[in-house]
Image (tube, rainbow, N blue to C red):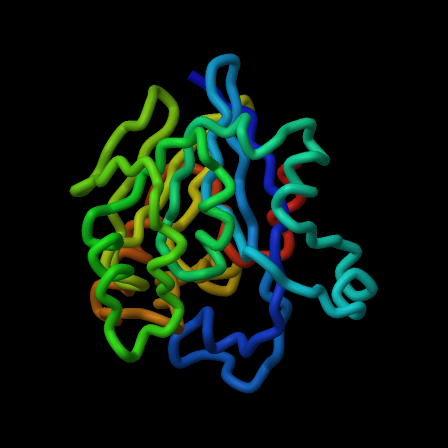
Length: 233
């Protein structure tokens, strides 16, 4: 089965590149886009990550990138949908910039790893990005490892950035796309040599090992925080 995959830009921050790439490129400021991915076929409207619940995009962002970040409801409207049209949500992980609009999707089933839910409900003091309110009252499908959600849609357990991060692999008319379950941009995946460990992690060794696993997967990688992701649309 094939899905049409559409990236929705639903947040932006300005950060240090070192947040993406552990022990590399510290001191260089970058734009950090927050993408949500809409995967559609004749039967399903699936959303992969839900972005920030509220943000104000700096005026320099569209000037420098040519991109416009939208609030989630406006982004959905731009592709002819409303929140109630989404039947499935996949959270790659539960940091605020990937689940901030979860509560909008009252008709959706949420596919989240059990370990990620546990970490969100009882976060370590060092991880301030978890907010339990973003998972309250959801219709949850708790996962314990890899799963084929439907033919052409695979959820792959890739912890390390967070305890329950998961990567999504989607089949489209243009081939397979891979949406890594952790903070990364194109600099995490150099053409030669190993993938870079994400700069933020709960377990650096595990994050590094799963970055190599993601890089080795068959398909084109769409880094969660890469500006050029919009080109697939």
